[in-house]
Length: 322
Image 1 (cartoon, rainbow, N blue to C red):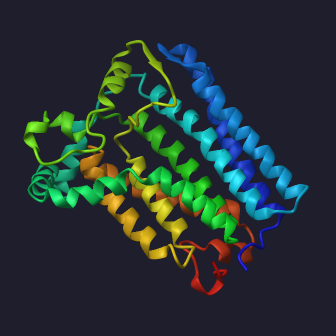
Image 2: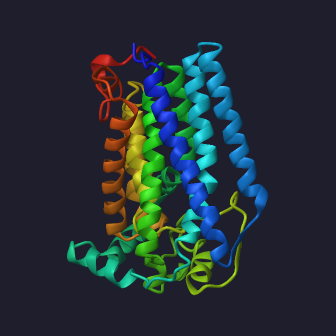
């Protein structure tokens, strides 16, 4: 059975996740007073408190009740809840130095690769029926994360769930850090497009981030409710990174393997239009996801048996029955 993880693997996964979350929180709190960004306090405090409570319950069910499946689900949920506002705040803070925007460079890199975003937009507008399932897939990542945590944890694949969360956190920190060094607006903004230029499409996140992003970049005062914060990262694409990490996690369950693969390939394909991303954003996000997932596998499962349990994208011969 897959759920053979002992306290060493579980403890290592929890330590890495919470060290990253709390370290990033400390950086946020040190950086915040140096900027003109203010935060609605409860939008940070409440998720952290909920994450801490879930972590405490996870520890209780692991140590006092010997229920590793429930413990894994509680641990992973707590880490997602706590990381989300901390990572969102970090993504806002890294824009405040106001480094030069890199849209022109990213656009040139796309063209150098033979990838013309405007041509892709035109094709999608002429085949708008194709955009509907892609947009649904683009918006599915949070539902997928929660569903996979529950399914993997309660079917004896707790290490796979923990690996997914550690990979999500590591890739998130890396993506946000790079986005601060190479800030960009979006393809729609760079090409000066309006909805009239693509009348048959309804991109999920083409413009919603631009107000906050431009204000942060020029040093204006910005007040953030972290429960409603927009994703303001252009390069690299965190959506693409999450798509690959979730795909790897879903591969560990025989019933979810192919549905999860199809859904996340669709999410990645949707990212250039629905997220207003350059193609190089997507490629960079996928590269970071590969590195983060490989590192998460090494962190969570140091023993050979544990590595077999989570594998790189899973090994069918060691799957537990669902």
